[in-house]
Length: 564
Ligand SMILES: Cc1cc2nc3c(=O)[nH]c(=O)nc-3n(C[C@H](O)[C@H](O)[C@H](O)COP(=O)(O)OP(=O)(O)OC[C@H]3O[C@@H](n4cnc5c(N)ncnc54)[C@H](O)[C@@H]3O)c2cc1C
Ligand code: SF4
Image 1 (cartoon, rainbow, N blue to C red):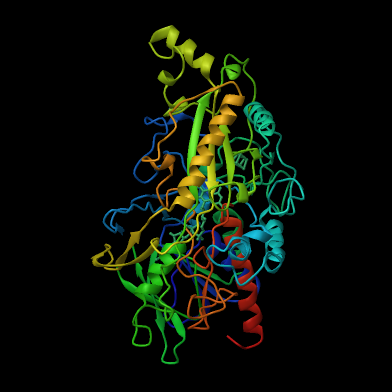
Image 2 (cartoon, helix red, strand yellow):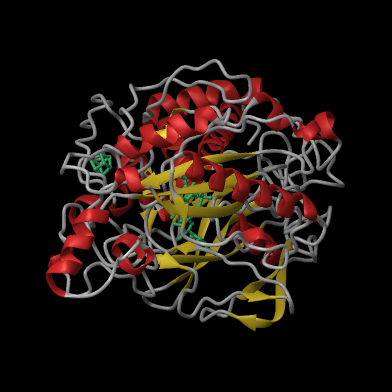
């Protein structure tokens, strides 16, 4: 941890070093600002600290998950659904799962790197179907910033010209693997669209970084910096400017206000010493992740803002959404007993199935896309989901080993990722009775899916079952019933939580304006998923990054003009 001078007033203080905060640190230091970056987690160096190329037998646990690493011991992210000493609560009868990272770079150390632009329709859905709200900006406003993120970070994909799936500046995509080719054939027969995936992984040398060598272990981090994490792509160039002061193990408690009603810094707890500290800054950018940013605002109370900072509209914490999701997997006989062959590739899908239907003929609004998984990855803990699921699988000794060889690589799975509509029953607020280990009041979540989401997920289940049948396979689990919510994942479980400080032109119904600048406090900005007005069926991070790039440029222009 670099020591910070209490007497220094920084140009900008950014809270959070993940996708949004990393971009802001990169862009603002490049634009000449002296930036203090507060990060609640510890330092992390993907080259020294990552587990790339470790074998399962290198660990007595064979890579099984731990509380700190719920996605497996070799996973690149420290954090999880529960963090010791940092609880959150849920209103009785509701369920919301909140994934939080606690490390430099946040969740970008292990995210799936599916990097999709929102399309033109995604910014004005209310005008199209009357539900939710339109954004105050259009795709054309964000396009130059998506382009800039593509150029800085690097992404593979293919130019397709689809109306609501805008193309980017792509590196060549990897070719599909065997199971992806079979899935693609079956899906196309059923009328689905299948195109190469779009992931922020470089397949050519890019800005001094080596291309991917197809080890398939992206979730562990990447020692050659061939995939995107804030830690290996954004923080190092920001540090090179000499204008970044990185303060890790710094848990922000609240944004502080000056007598002029402007933000004048951030108070935080040094997690190592337990001491309270304060960073002074002329501009504050919150990028602690959507819900944590809402929590910071709600906890920043003053006589001017008794209900929380920038909350004159009363909408901080409201309009919370997550992606809808469900999964179906199955056994495909024609993929068993295959001769050994190399299925190496990137650590993620090589194909992508965008939304392909017309909602006017369906009983739910908006759409979903399909992610595909399977193949012959390195066996480890939980390998194949249990041999008993395969015909005649089980037993012991040589016959068991034979079964594993026979069935290895013969399963496939599909995940749906769809758009929910914001509703009044999904929000977070401060729990008046619970504080975390630092004494900071915690969030309480409220959640309720509606028939829009249930019907959409039912459609996902039916579609995935139809693709598996078309491949000649059998599904591992029965169709979930209506009472089981058709298998819908819990709110928050897809880890695409957005909203809580939404963007709008009207300060009575939104928290920030079209530049992600608080209506109530002109030197306070938000650079994570909190300003999102709607979800789209696209994974959100590329849009978080493009908006953060856009907001950072606005801040730089305003500083130049002497307005901030
Ligand atoms: C397993 C997994 C797979 C995913 N796959 C995809 C995908 O394929 N595509 C996609 O688009 N999205 C994906 N996501 C979601 C993606 O990771 C998030 O959308 C993205 O990281 C959000 O960026 P952020 O900057 O808002 O938050 P984060 O990346 O979480 O960063 C927030 C940072 O703020 C810090 N912080 C929090 N509170 C405080 C505080 N009070 N004080 C100081 N610091 C604080 C945290 O420690 C963290 O480092 C995935 C997520 C997970 C977990
Ligand atoms: S698959 Fe490529 S990008 Fe992913 S960890 Fe391996 S080398 Fe890095």
